[in-house]
Length: 265
Image 1: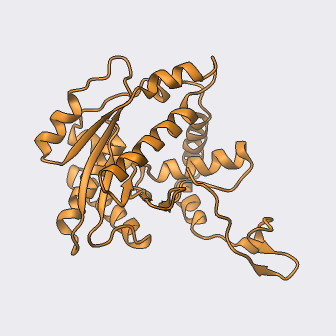
Image 2: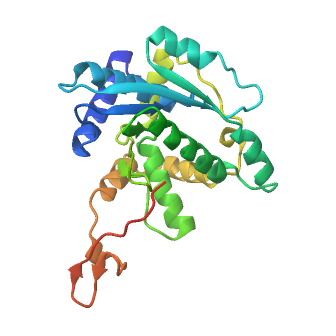
């Protein structure tokens, strides 16, 4: 297993590549880092703080947690951690847990509704705090899994973009961990001994399609090592003329057309 210094350098390199590749951060940015209490968001915050120190530009960071009022949620953990870290932060209290549990039919997964409610609340918080950008902790595995979920179950070629604008067009959403492997994040999280807070919503559901896709990818990796790297490369190497979407490619004139302005999640 890699030591702490080695895995930290790997993550720094991957995040630095994503920031540069997708022009994520500019001088004067005010970035809201969404902190859930899981390994991914803790890692995201550490990466953003690192680049805030070493980048040749100046940008602000504020960590924000949405307390969804889940039963047993340890309210003191994040304020204590962030205070010790010396990071500006804000805890938003909103009982989305109750709404999700009341509105989700029995036997159905809570992720979709929970995600929409959480996203809307965080977007509003970013505006209230004067932030022009919002950073989320999705990593490379999330991006690949989302692509396959959409491909197999939603009938569309779509995934989590590393950078996009919200529907209102007044906030840029970033995924700085886009090139980071989940396995590296897990190792880093263990070394850093983050005070992990488990989720009682999505984390407690066993029949999620995402979990099945995650296992499918793991099985592929066993038989064909580094398949995830190949799939990630494919998402950056698209040929519209070799697909079947007339909104991307005009098969009458054989010319590319304007890319559809879909709402990414």
